[in-house]
Each structure stands twice: as structure tokens, then as C-alpha cells.
Length: 112
Image (spheres, rainbow, N blue to C red):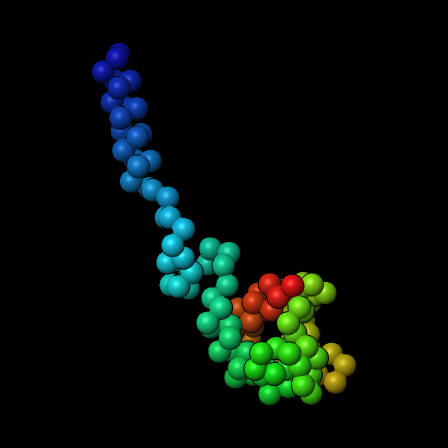
């Protein structure tokens, strides 16, 4: 009985040790894995390609409003809706869809 218990405990320790904690080196964020973190580089590229002409390269505004703190007033879902359907003087941005829309809205929602 003791050998069996020891084997189970030792085996469990090996399995848990092999799982490991991924550390906090940000490697999974760089790979674009979905761990709740936004791929900032990809989001910035999407923003520059589609939004910066009106909202400024640094999000400070221009023809469109300042977006430096847009997440303080709007949720990710709100931002997705505004991008897809437009609001006020902003036309709908139908070219931003799918993963790009998700990445961009998540990134903007973090601006608080």
C-alpha cells in the first residue's frame, strides 16, 4: 500500500512539474497566442493602416476624436460597434473585420 501511494504521489509530482508555469517573460504575447493579452504590434499596424489618417498616428486626434483614453468611455463591444457601423461623422469601416477588428477593439479598449 505504501509503495502504491508513493508511486501515485511521485507520478503526480512529475506530471505537475512537467506542466510548469510559463514564467512571466511575455513570450506567449509575442507569439500572438490568445492568453488575454493583446498583440500591440499587430493592433498598431491595423490602426496605422485604417485609422491614423483621421485619429492621428499617436491617437491624439485630428479630423476624428482623440482616442488616447477611449477605453475609459467605451467597452470593447462598443468600440467594435463604432468601427463596424460608424458614429457621428465617422463612417463605417467595413474593411476592418474578423481578427483585425477583435485585435484593434481590444487594444483600443485598454486605452484608459
